[in-house]
Image (cartoon, rainbow, N blue to C red; front, top):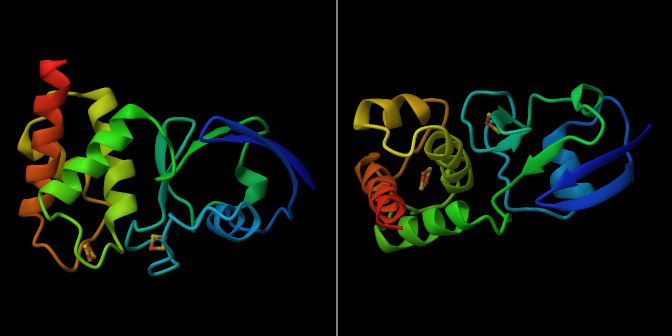
Amino acid sequence: MKIEIIVNGVVYREETSPDQRLLDFLRDDLGLKGTKKGCDQGECGACSVLLNGKVVNSCLILMAQVPERSEIETIESSDSLILSLQESFIENGAAQCGACTPGMIMASSALLREKPDANLNEIREGLSGVICRCTGYQKIFDAIKDTQRGLVQK
Ligand code: FES
Ligand code: FES
């Protein structure tokens, strides 16, 4: 099948198969390796991307389920909020092995777009689909809080 989709603002017209997973399409066909393959079965959230603004586990989405001309955002996006989150994760030491980081940042960006002043409980809930095995989460929450302060100051 042929599909036209917009990834990080770039229009792609690609040949794919209906049963190819979005994760593999992004990594293997488009070369966007920033989206990580963790558990590969919908458990860890490392593969989270935004599909038409909603966080999805790209390892669970088949290309047949991706509507034509969908907008997808990945960690390679140059969106200012995603870039701010990246900087804040680095400054706060919130990325250690980095396996979860793209998923954390994509889930955080969806949350902060919807609720820039989300409280800690809402942040916890917003990130509940992404598992970090390294940082104990506090540094991740600190990074998001710092990003929120930046949003408020702008
Ligand atoms: S790799 Fe998709 S949820 Fe773990
Ligand atoms: S930084 Fe290693 S899993 Fe989160």
